[in-house]
Length: 138
Image (cartoon, rainbow, N blue to C red):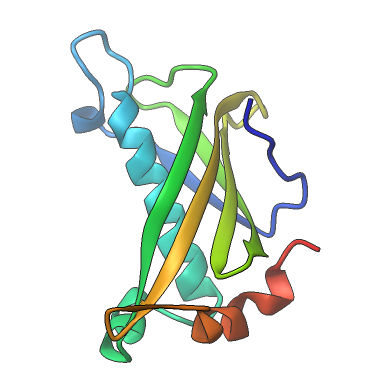
């Protein structure tokens, strides 16, 4: 079981689009990975650091590991709220990301580990830490 984190520091409302559903009329499981990624990108921008800026400085966050637990399917036109908390373990940033219906029913529970490359080499992610520190779970 994936353990989540209750202290969300960022929320992003979204809506299921027609091309995200499969023949059964539900969101294809791979699209939840896109929702989670989009939420992380929006969080970074909200925290003051866009992916374009990171890359131009030679900094590239890369996925190291992701665990996803699917709880409730979404369908065409459904609305959701993607919530995020962030912590750190050594050089890794840990994103606790959960997606809920507007009625607070859990849809997806995820734990995402992100490593940071600087000029192609593994780093401790100090640039990211300087932007995320005030939002990090203790």
